[in-house]
Length: 140
Image (cartoon, rainbow, N blue to C red):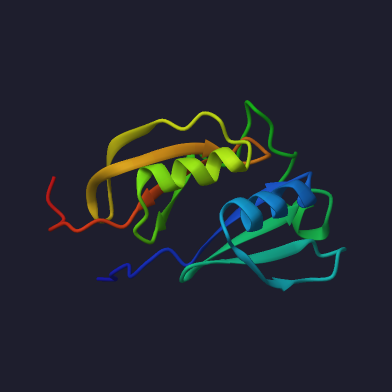
């Protein structure tokens, strides 16, 4: 039987690479790790021990996935990024500085147990859950 260790990467498709890169690098602090030639259309961002791949929809790779994501046709429901320990106020202040004005925390269950998290949207309308690392015993 296999055992999952962590999320390796996820792939998001976009028609607006510049806006997506600003969001994931400026707002979330990811670093560009690797870019393929523009005709291939893949940019890989480091997100902790994982990668977020962004594929341009009009590129060689992007055309394999169909139409561009829209408000009613995104590629996924959401994904969660586990943040190093950060207070809700510090995270809220950071998001507000970046023009993300709807910041509402709720208690949700995740890989480290129950704790506060917030949902935000990237420029393509994908929902990103931000959840700070917590001290827990993995019980609800």
